[in-house]
Length: 608
Image 1 (cartoon, rainbow, N blue to C red):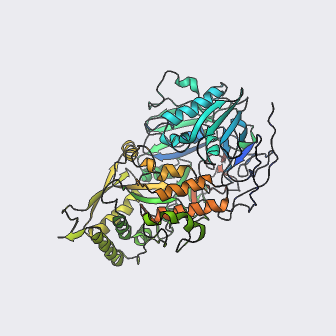
Image 2: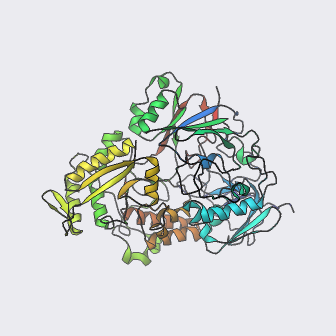
Image 3: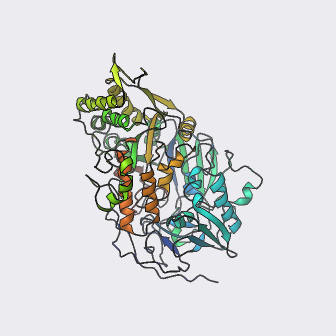
């Protein structure tokens, strides 16, 4: 029976002033199959939409883009824990039942699936496959492939596919020749959308084989690009599949325009930058505002062969900086963590490294409507946190601000405060060495990847400051493979961290901050936090149908995170800076989620 679609109602979210205010109309008691699904209300795009609003359906096909990565790779399977994989692969060669419109907070539209249906409380979701959906080898996508993909990724895949979603699945069952239903046993409205975003792989490729074994055989997917060549640790070349099954879908018009995407690997960022200047790369994202202003004056820029583009970004700041591993003493004491934050002289470092051009991150969701408000927690935010008042760290309810120095190298005032906090935590300086009551010196290492020069510059200044109060800190640099293995097993004292967020944070927050990640390898809870209040706020975010309740829960979570003093924040990116050859073009309209693999290279094109 052909699905009956409902007519769309224009809806949006009042997040960061970027979406339309809506009355959030209730869903019908029993939803019918639809062409799309939104976290709140109905999808913004009508059923007959032509393309995504930030894609150019008239973009020409052809040309090549060459991007650069640092480090190397020893695997081409992006869906398992073992091995180091070029991060771009899972965005280019693989698809899910539904695809995301990054010009909405969180809305999906049919991709491998032609329709989606949910229960009245989203206790289940049902998808109907498109008959024309094909893998890159031309074979049809079947229900067996889909169910196997869910089960295999949920039980053997990378932890990001197991936690949150798979733990909430009660059962998966076929309901027709091309349809399946996934039922959930938890009250989590986002799970229906997360289900639509799981990659679909070919079951027969792995019959009788170990899916978890790392290697250079890439899983067969349905995406527009396939691997056309590679040399381990050197490059990966991907070509656009001329027989790509979904090229005429509205969701895909104006996307996957480039014939070839090549990923070159370099030892470090400095060598990569020289490669770009020499014309080996055709595009480069620059994260340092000072470098963007002062070092992009080479001949190709002056002649117009290379264009400097600045892309606005409407997402929350996320968190960038250096994370402390609370699984290890003395980082398990918040007073020690606050002392290290005080000793981190950001104002002086920022002026030295970026010319003071980039503002500091003030909280995990800063720069958006989801960010915590200054001062005391008020209203619904306070109500949500109140049951945990006795266990919350100072600053969560009262308000927390990062310390600010006077910008000089000595940073005396903050260092005095740091020493005072350390004394409260049982540390004192003896003969110029900070020691605990047992006489053990305060010493730790900062784990960094080889070639992370800007991060090393921050830490070198930090080390000098710490030495003034008797703390011995050192940098430990390792290659890519060792670095990621150490992160997976939490084998570090302090390391760098970057977590980016959209305007619709959800289940991934449990992977970032959930208690299950304290001991289980491979989570993204690098700090090892185990805070019931944080998990309760995430649960509330996932269960509520009200946008105001959702916003309050995120703001409350933001307070728990920043006042937890787990990360020493550095600067926010604010906007994305991309230098590229003049032959590469992008649409005038930028999605509200800004730059990312959904923007570059996805909707870019090549034209002389």
